[in-house]
Image 1 (tube, rainbow, N blue to C red):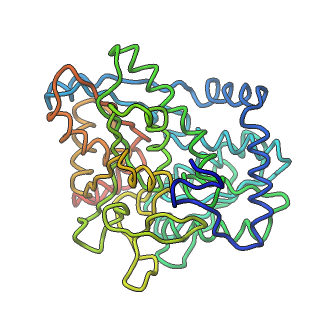
Image 2: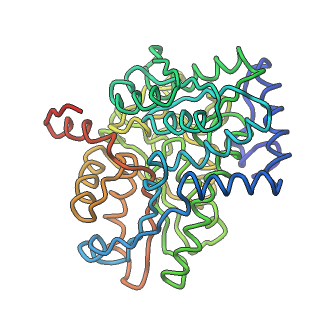
Length: 395
């Protein structure tokens, strides 16, 4: 990262003056606590005793044998408390908010996993919690809405725009503007104004820290590639971070292509977007001919965001990471294949990364390995996938 919250030309703080004090307060607090031994001891204790870290690095033997080529390892973030990687960042931000004297957490959510994680942390710390969720996503992810309410959070459906993740982010930012004194905005991905992309990355980097240790123990050498799904990009940057300086390790982000990057029904930002400014940052965004943020689509509520985090945009610019499109159909096929082959039902978001791994592994030799991050579990997606396959089931 360059100075002033920039990753190359990306990042920055494109926000109204009404938010500057909150962002400055957050940056000062993070700089004060990020290297504080007591803060890090508390956070490590929460990771290990509450979230269940370290998560397993699992050798997918049947997949590897069936597909041929590289040995496939799955980083099992689905085994974390709340069922996804989101808890890593939320525990870090909630602890930071508590140190700052905040009593209220607000969050946006798409697939609901970040909302559930935030509601969980709020319950743990005895804080008030409000989650903004696109009305369309509340229907797609009704189970997670119930979980958030069960945990004590207020869930506010957002009806503006496309009523999905981008609109939930916008509403959460407006809410933060109106109530800064006691409220921390627990942003769920590596996006938004500085310092959020850095804070979220640092808390999620525990993923690649563990992968590195675990794969060296299992294989005695680094993997040929680390593969992860990308929406805003928190699980991916967490999976990539401790490998960025290892040029022999390919970093591959898998974007939601929806019905194809040659259609308007896609959310593959790197593949179809262009440079713009939105939600407080400069990065790549899906835009229409007039430069307005375009509606995006994916079967995955967690990946249908029209932008990508600024560090990912930078890694793309310098050629350090590759970003590949994966369609709904490919993701659903991977969802079903991994379920049948390994007895692991992955989140539909994670299935995008698994779909690409299924194509990529056979191109490598048997003495190589790849790591795929299973960012979450797929309980929440069974109804959507069944519907995609023409079957209606009730929860």
